[in-house]
Image (cartoon, rainbow over all chains, first blue to last red; front, side, top):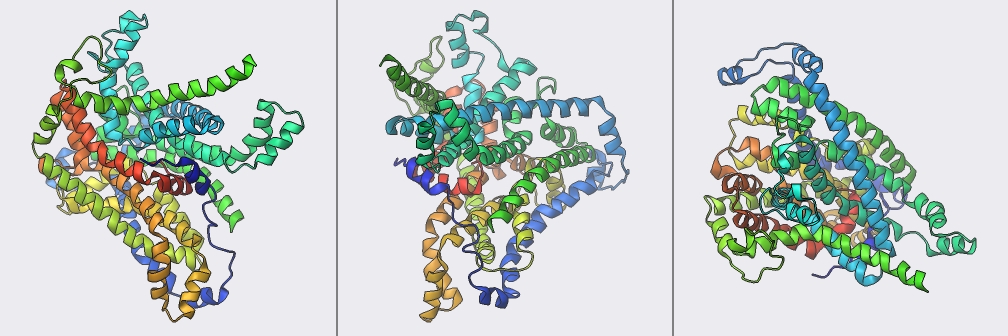
Length: 325
Length: 276
């Protein structure tokens, strides 16, 4: 159980120059020729075959009328943009989209706030307390998703659940036998607590790692200039962690937006399909209700939204990559 | 004086509260698993188990197909991670050690692939696997998991390879090693920590994967542990002792691996900027 986060953190942040020293051996690179592509072939081939092909298939399915009957009889019925028309024309789709956006926003804001504060706290703590908190964070981080959802169902269980017991004993007696998965809001509440709990350790530990790279002299200089704790944070810490915060926020947006197991395992999108976000909606519509074409169309629309989010993120990453090399 | 005491106290107090918030669910899982049913179904929770029983673990282990599913999960996970490490090693070497046109695009392909929304693509994957008549087989699962963990494996290994000084490799080649020989004898041993960290992440991803196996493998004997745990909860309903024992059994390998490897893993994963 040797937990040595301090050392790991120091090692973590300057990860190695991305591409070695800037082009010290041009003689080799010229002669490389076909070699890089031969080495890359298996990895690129596997990615194209097993990731690219399903993507294309997804696109093709979304233009088909494919329900249980067509599936069993192996019929291919092309319907053009009908699925998209139906999806975009239905009120349900838009309600789910708005819900997904709200769900993602609330979760990401909570994750980033709690994660940043916890990370900054880690930097302030003494050795022993930092170790203790790190152990807690690492345990949480390592907890498998489905195991965690199961534990949360037990924590929030209607009968004998710890949460209801606690609320009851804190004086909120009407919560003694509260059914958490009985309403839209309370189900989302449980899912949100779960997702935030699972995501904070990554943000906190990486942020703490980032703060360890800030030179101590900067703080000393700030103190000499008469800066208080808040001023020191704004003028020294924040500029250092800003790029990290930005990138992480985007990653979290993407992760939360496509979160599947947590929502599905806790309520299958229920009650009354009221907690379906886009990935769950596509799944329930496509697989559950066997409207495969429709499900594929919803998937593709979801992927488009994700792509829009990602392209912004990649612009940032590419700019960094260019600056580094 | 008073203020400085308070100033020292609140971070520690907050840290303690946070520690409890984070660790409690994990603790509660194990605690419930070891408690006799009488201590689980009580009006007031028993915070520290006094009577320890293995009864619930017995129930979980004796559940239908448990050992088959353990074997399935291990096979799929280990094969996927192993294959992906092998393929990734070549690709990472090419990216880290050679310069060629299109290199940046290749990196971008892996970065995009790393974020592939697999959860949303399951319908198409189901159709492809069904057309290939390979539903309820472990082969498609292994292959898809391999590609799922491949991008991050490539990107992190590339960082580790780039960190090995070129001079080491070159001096080995001066001493008469071939390029392959230099790689095997010099770079590879230095990559051990990188390989461990990367495989830890891959192991977690494949071990946890849920939506794909849920759709592809409906046969009880062809499933993996996440689906089992998900159904265990549905099937056993209020037998929380057995459900928590099942969750503990499922979580234990990852928790142990993580605690042993996290020193390297946290560094590796932060470098790859990816959540476990």
